[in-house]
Length: 227
Image (cartoon, rainbow, N blue to C red; front, side):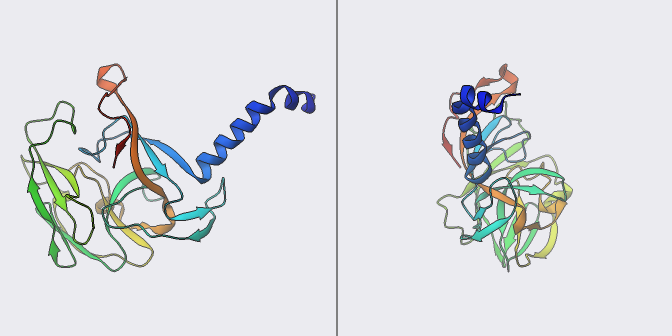
């Protein structure tokens, strides 16, 4: 095999490929959402833009951390590789180190302050074929600094086991994360605290969304949607 000939004939493509791999490894990537655990804000089929430089600088093509320049904030959505679940997950940060988190009947309490829940009828952009036994609420996390914060989805028929947990202290270099689809999310209530070292990056935008119930056609309203 003549390596020099291959390089000469394909160098533009090879440079492009290496550059793309470097970009996806060290700078930003996209995440294809396979489940509804983050409904109503993130749907099955969404392609989510992940900023890998949001919190850390890592050696390209490795998990070696060169520097930590920022910490996840309550309310942000993060992508991480969970050793406990043995897969990549996307969830919302609910608790940061030092927080005490508890839940009773789907109502979160953070450091002794219950979250503020506000009913909303704005379900149009969030769910395809919304079930009649679900409720959408705005949830405002204490000290999150996010206007109106985010929507959550609850089932009305009965409280699941996930609707209750006793106070949990978030230890150093860990996060408590949860899905916005509160009765259908394997999050910190199932996998426990998430080590800071498992973070891949911050989810910032839905690039596009493909609807598997409509022949995988793009959802027209979900291009470049901020999270």
